[in-house]
Image (cartoon, rainbow, N blue to C red):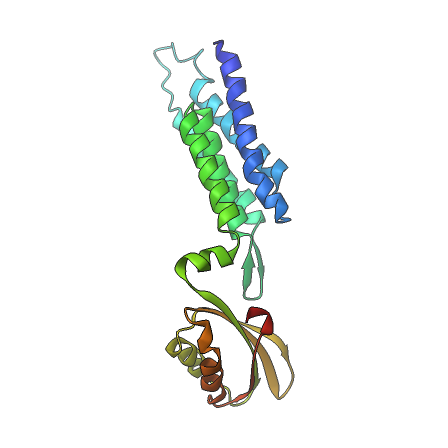
Amino acid sequence: MNTEIDWILRLLLAAVCGGLIGYERSRQQKSAGIRTHMLVIVGAALVMLVSKYGFQDILSARSIVLDPSRIAAQIVSGISFIGAGTILIHRTQISGLTTAAGVWVTAAIGMSIGAGMYLIGISATIFIIIIQFVFHDDSILNMIIRNSHIRFQIEIDSNSFNKSALEKALTNNGVNKTSLRITSADAQTINLQIDGLTRNKNDRNKIILSLCKIEGVNKVQSDSSYN
């Protein structure tokens, strides 16, 4: 096969792999979708091709020594700017980490295809698609590890509430990976939303009673949408 045709086919394969990965992100309405992933992976494959084959015409000179990995290594540094642009931080909430990681690994797949490692690149693409589609829904992961999502709405006294006591009560009742978010507040009270995972959904009433005993907790309500 003609060498340049082989290179073009590598870019085409990279574009297909990037499009498949980006499709899942576009379905989730993320800023980095099909076009972004295709551009990243084709660019990474192109830089890899240039790094590996672009200087063959001058390598015959005895006085010239070339490290082909130096140009390719800049892909890793350059992709960090795009990855950072997809991460959003709002108060205590962070979003875009999965998309940033996907863009980074997409560049790595492009490098592997550009280097001629087709099987590795295609296999990695399949793995990424499986991870993005299957594990995007937390209910699937929770089903595997037999955890149930639990959510509470709590009203607390802003002057006497003890956060450490709340965290201890949740831990003692088997609620793991908890996240706490303020939904509203005034001079006297604060309304919190607590999300967590528990292995036994039937312990909900027991958890509510335990939370009600904490000093500064005025009211505890279970979110009915997670029953």
